[in-house]
Length: 178
Image (tube, rainbow, N blue to C red):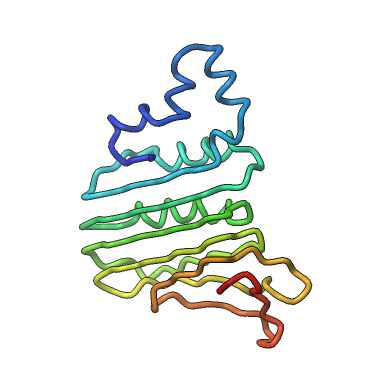
């Protein structure tokens, strides 16, 4: 878990492995699979300013390995942190096999839209977005057409999420979703 608590950040494997000594660091950094799963938990206005930089490094260490990403955000006040993290995560959407976001925020979000383009390699997409006001989020399924192998097995989205489908509705193809 990559928590927004500065004390907990460096106790997370594989990050903690890379801090033991040079040899352990070399091993940890040479194994992209160690960096393929990340959970970001942000609660009650705890935060560190460089969490997005840590995420970018984490993704770099994972190389081209498929990613499992989970973001939990429970906040009061200004939630720009949430959008900063989503922006970093969106650049890795083509590698995500599991993408889960859970929010429960007691604040009003800015009226900026966030778009997530689903990759055919995606296995599960869970978006549970609870907020005082609307969350302007778009999920793009336009690449899920006949002739494209879709791995999507789990789809659970909050009603306020806008979905983008292929221009020809009869071409949408999600054979493993059931």
